[in-house]
Image (cartoon, rainbow, N blue to C red; front, side):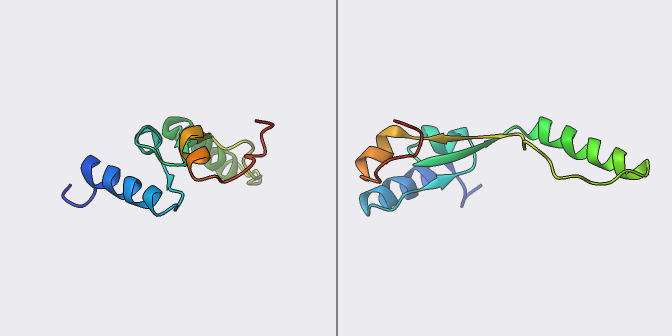
Length: 92
């Protein structure tokens, strides 16, 4: 708790952006705190997907690749533009 706290994460994001370093986060909090990009993982759905794969294997099936994985990617437009990273490749 003392190392990974809201205040520390927000400070790291702020300092990184001041140095023109894009920040990649792994949840909504990072995105809301100004991270340039965040992976928003649906942990319940990922667990269900993994359970389904295990069930398939235990019943003699093959483990096919997951498609699509249960996560979303959010780009923080304000941070992206402030860092002048160019075209996001999404038509924007």
